[in-house]
Image 1 (cartoon, rainbow, N blue to C red):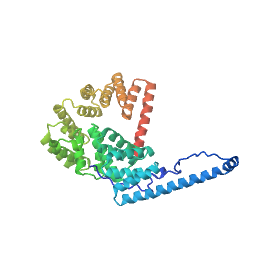
Image 2: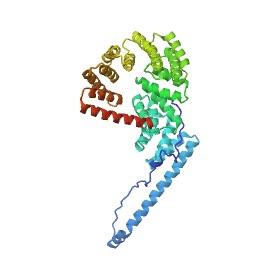
Image 3: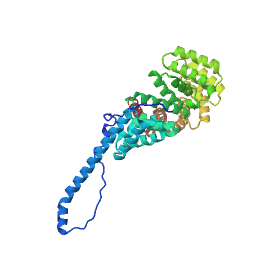
Image 4: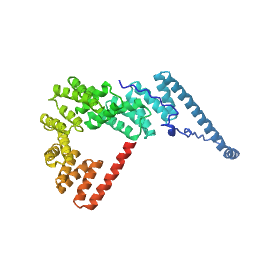
Length: 410
């Protein structure tokens, strides 16, 4: 069963006002060849065009009238909670007018609420073709795909919904779309993205059990959907989710106590110390470093813990201490841009400019959309006296930074 979403797509909706079709429906022309006399031919040449035009007008008017009648009946069936009748009528109307976005939306919403996700997916796909900048259609397409366990396109389309436009006009759909995006990010090991989305929801007042559960999976870096979580991990996950939520929603003392309880019970479990360290970092960096080092003892190949330590020492300009952590991170995760970024910054701080450029160029190749890495590379080029390269990196940094600021404002 999917999360029921009751969405009204009224004809006066501002989202789709600009999409209404203004032209008449095409009609089928039939040509009948008759044998006629010359006089009849002259008469036909002078009268056939107006007659044909009138016939087309009558046919078009009849089609519009039929469409309006069926569309009205479909809306009535929807409002009277007669889904099967409404589905049949909407499909009839859409055959007459395939460019009717409100009809595709209403039909898709009814199919989704009836758990007919495969049909709903195709319906919302048609709507995204009609209205590619319509965020709600992309969100509903992603939700249908999620219910069909087609998770890769579901993630792509939910992301597109949030990039394309705002869902603020429908808070319920917005909440459901953000939640599903977050749990998919976690499943695909995009833990930071999933965690941040869930924190935004928590700060907006959503602290439901499902959100706490999803947050626990994310901060513990467990690549599962809530429905896939091992039952024996549930208590630990809920404890971690509650502690993380409290730490980020101005209940830091409660969160700290809850994390300490979590460590007392599950301190030898991977990612427990790491999770606590990430929340301590902004208020007690020394304690955070202790938690990260403890995590490395439990999980010797833990790359995120090493990078947290490396970046903290970069912040302190203690490059020698941070160096081995960054070097090991690159060794363990050579395709991770953050590892090369950290090592490049440390080399730069140590005065090893050529080595820094090599690492930062690799980081840029792996993450060409990161303004921070572009700026670090610009600094390294400038320090090496490579003016043209420095100017190019600076220009790219300014372009990417402007794009990010624009996205934040929107």
